[in-house]
Image (tube, rainbow, N blue to C red; front, side, top):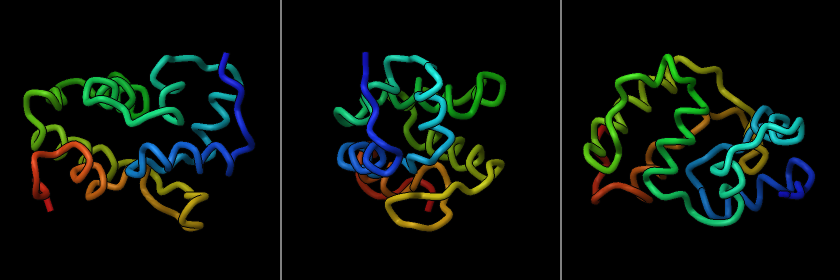
Length: 122
């Protein structure tokens, strides 16, 4: 069982390992209400693998919208392009670390963490 800190404390722990993610309040509330998926437990423990990143993104954006998104292990550039498209459809969320409204994911940080050097879509 994962014991959650308060929202800001949990966001700080997530940011330590996954700086690309805006750990916004809806994610925290889902976890508080008992939504359980192994990938959510990993967010504040270590950097996600590319496979876990795909699983997390599928949960974040929903199965219907995520259909057809390339596997990041096979086509990183295609994956990043589709994440950019999905992010554009989402509302901005309050980022407790940066203290401002931001998208769910920072694509530059995501590409720096997982890409093969150089941003693929920027």
